Length: 435
Image (cartoon, rainbow, N blue to C red; front, side, top):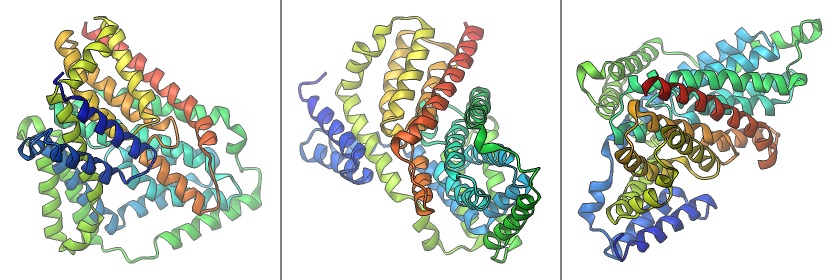
């Protein structure tokens, strides 16, 4: 390491602490850390700009814009109300169908957007039936974080890994679909098995059956009271489908995910004649600033040899056994992401994993899939593990239901450990087949 390498390390730790204890907004903390580096002349402005991964920023802006227009079209609300009708008010169906729908949506949308759509309806449905919505919402949040793991665009850690490493949309689905599917099914069965009283059928109670049908009709009227512009809806859904098609055909078009997302977003803004100022207000600029700041902070540490020192003295001491290396990356990422923001953790881990692969090449990008699964699945471990968790619990609290940190962990921790065990087994099979 260089003599003054301790400066970016101290600043990075300070930023981490400020974010973890919510002393500062995460974007302010990250950018302030960068400004201190620039003032102290640890890095120059030109170097700072060089560290930012603009491919990731483009992909985030594009997808945020597309999702903002889709939300305005009413597509998500229509879909969610239809799912509520299909459940017939049966508790098991509510859990299973909402969790599956949430996992699928989260594979293509931001997890926070998904829970903002799903949680209010599942609260109204369960509350109206006299059920405790807390267990349903926790299961739904876990399904959201699980589903977001399956694709390149489903969760920020995947976006970062895909952009930095050069992995495609198809590669993410090809390698992560099976572990995510098995983990999601395992977690749903875990909730059904450990909370049987919450999912008793209502077929033997005619009064309750009738009241549930009335409740579903009320939800239909409440949530679909606005007039749907079919042309606007078709344009929005059509552009989303075009974006997904271009992601899938990357090997043919050779268009990067960032270029595709931003181009489709601009086309969508044009053909729908949306008020661009209004749409841009829905883009999470603070998140983009946060990403840019972290890229620079980690880039400065990498430039000064800090990342290499950490890799050689901590992660590379596990030896050259590929199974041990894979399990270490997966479980360290999983446990750490339950307590600290998985975005800075992922950005920090990428150069470390690169160095591990330089020393011991492991085929089929297994270590990258281990990092992705650990960082994304680990977000389910605690209440503060992912943004979707915090947002969902805030919605519950507004409805009069409080879930403490400990109560959330009692429900989520066993399910998270189970999902990490499933991921470990699948990755071990992948590795065995590749060796």
